Image 1 (cartoon, one colour):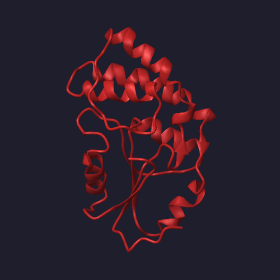
Image 2: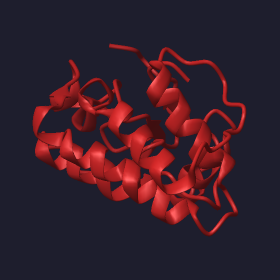
Image 3: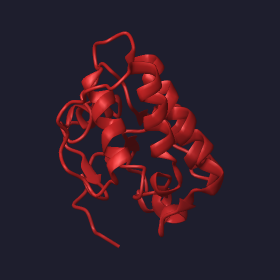
Length: 167
């Protein structure tokens, strides 16, 4: 267990930190749905991650659509595949004790998943959280830090510690 120096709040990532949903989501099918909707969409440059090519392409397209009214439909298409993966998702080691390990320190989630999908995935594995900052066209996604600032603000904190998998 990592010992933190009395943080005012803790911000968790979701996917492959608390629950592995990514490895059970068919992002190849999601990408095909995005291509059906948008044609051959371009995407924004996104930092390299340990994601497979379809996952990376889906996230790049969504980032590239920020500010575009088609973002909502496109995100919904991807979310349908993410939601469908919940029954096959796996809790990560430590999920059951994560909330208790925070003690009295409030915690939130910052994720590239839509907030409702993140809540559903965690609830499926018995983990409840009040503050979730999910995929949103008005908040720059990780790794920009905007979602972390938003999560900390909703918790009333500006000095949070973030526990994370790869970003």
